Length: 473
Image (cartoon, rainbow, N blue to C red):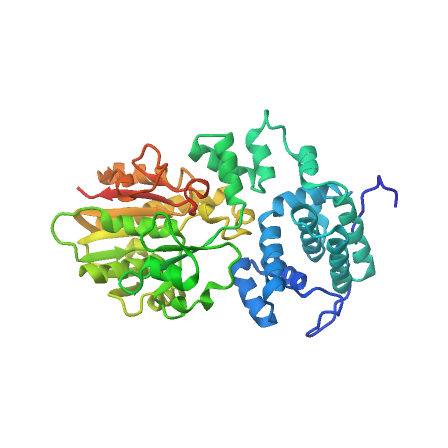
């Protein structure tokens, strides 16, 4: 094959035979790369979530230390950078990327990630993925993977970006989207929320493309943030009174004793701040009935339940899906929380709640850094259906809260249609007062002009959580 000719791929529809039954990896195959490959395949074939599949796979295969760290880096890194990797791989082919077999593409993505975004030596990265391809598809497939990865390795990431990215002056959003491995429509939604197409958008997208710290929440009344930090070796969070940060790449936090004992949990600091904000809003009269209208899987319900226990209130938690309702029950065990399996739009609960949290289902664009494959699954069309549901849930909350009571509307997204659009429409229809939510996030900087709060990874180190507080007239 001449250097100028781009490699073709094995013909579609003629997969190489694969061995049946369980198979032990050959002695030359790297267990960390094999684990990463299997997770990518599960994500592609079964729509699995990498952050759920990988920890279990590491446990099953007994991978620890450097092997576990490498498997984690390759899995999350290749998932997060998929769009960028695909652009580079496509530039090395003589046919559309869509015609490449899925297993082969998994090998190519893992190889390209190692070549472009790690310090792994070129020969080690290429040889490992060629061996993987040989096991999966035979010598012909291995030769194809070898040819493509050799071509990828001819340039570093910056050189590929200079060749493939749109012109920064003519298309700043498109340029930053490719450089930070985001779909263009998501980069555009960030730009619209920030009101910026330049340095701040770049900072937001870069922070969203980085591996996040692990955030823990100390259960109020059981353990303090200082005590939790001391036990886990973490650092007290800068804003949440109950938060602790652990470094990115920390092992399975479920192994930590405070989490096993249910006096702490994994929860982003932004989520903590939004739940706590609801409890800080002053209300006249009674303050005994609280409601979490979209409670699954139970993180905010548990925090609200612990705070309710201290203040003498009780929490009703509504979750439509039975399996998620069971998760809420497990998360809130021992707390003054009653779980109801119901649709939040028609919960059947008696109105008159003093405080209501609407942690509405959303696009999740604010937590893409924690769910690395999600950015490539979501579509712009998803948002329209979600905003309709969000509006209905917020309307239901405003009917369930008593006059003078408060509702916190929370989504993990900065998309304006899911945030300001939903709130302004609900406030107009219900005549509810939109309070300045910034008052209930004391000590948190860079909250903008209000009345809403939009948190950002690059500003606050949290997921991009949105919070609006409304009072029923």
